Length: 470
Ligand SMILES: Cc1cc2nc3c(=O)[nH]c(=O)nc-3n(C[C@H](O)[C@H](O)[C@H](O)COP(=O)(O)OP(=O)(O)OC[C@H]3O[C@@H](n4cnc5c(N)ncnc54)[C@H](O)[C@@H]3O)c2cc1C
Image (cartoon, rainbow, N blue to C red):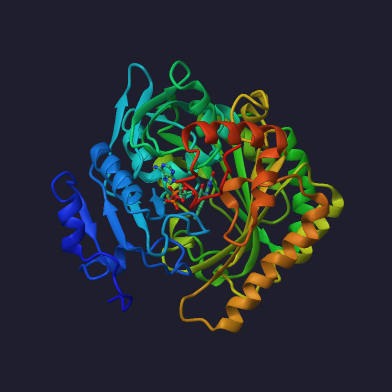
């Protein structure tokens, strides 16, 4: 139970909001408050004055008005996955969307509406019932809202574009408490900004996505090699990835072999490099596309096989559990030069925790074919997007935590000469405003600041990777 003095007793919040708010209101004295204020990153320990768990758009409007009337900080929680912990704040109101997880599919029109508290596992589950999918994250328990608003990278992006390239419309509650629809025809400046500019412009209550035929069986899975093979494998992978068809999405994971089903126990936690692939097309074509990769060297274990897309998308879920402590550093890479590969091979296995890892997403394909300023996503031209993810357990010592975070910082510092901007969704809480600007570049940042000035001139929504009103 929290020991801080509540700003509002539950009953006082009920008095003000109770009549119009249909969801759950949690004050520090409420049962369930301590669970509700927790997010994926267990290192984040904040105590909001009130958690407003909304059931629908009307609740979101009330919560925004309530917070503004009382001059309270607002944090918006979608899936609660952002490593920086911006989904919760101290002393303010958390607009918690976790009870709004519905997904409706229109199979004839190949589109879907998704409520903004949904996770990617919810979207994959519902859309795959119709043999459809859209580009989402590579871990099923990541939130749709935050991921989409930052851009959205994943296995399907080289064939079908970023998540924002598939965004057709969004419904938004603005700082004024108005409900607006943004699309190619309505509030077009807002629509542009929502496609990469993060949670700066209002609370999105639902998203409409384009869907594509995918699977339901796809050629997908990881292949693991011993860490000693890293430099040779990355040199091979550089060319393999450059020549890959758009259908082939891949992510390199450098760390250890996780203790997943199908992996022999003697390999668990052994330092290793993995390339996880998903082919968004016919299984036989996928088999051909990954053949050379599987033949490289002597894999420790090869799990590439025809798999249900939904199962593949959930395959990494248990490697990044809720409540563990996390700290990330990130950079994009224009290419994989021999020097960059040497840095990666030198640093990737120097963490002390077997749970720490680095992940490198292969970009290009459909992502790079969209005009640079067509959306607010700032890094379409890069070859790879990398995040260096320090992980430790809640009961591990401060010294251990310090060693892991120092590893991530050292790794990033060594990679900086090869870096080319950063993905805004991979920034952590100690990444300053300069890095937010770096994620967008000056031109896109300036335009975002103008849209911010129009929709949120008072910077009500600032508990995020903040765009300051221009
Ligand atoms: C394990 C893991 C795997 C990941 N994999 C990928 C990946 O494959 N691809 C990728 O692109 N990213 C990935 N990410 C990064 C991910 O995109 C961000 O963490 C993202 O913020 C998660 O969205 P969320 O809704 O869960 O975030 P939350 O923590 O709930 O929200 C983060 C911020 O987003 C904004 N926000 C959230 N919901 C709304 C809303 N409804 N309206 C307005 N603003 C809102 C707010 O500013 C909030 O502070 C991953 C993250 C994790 C932890």
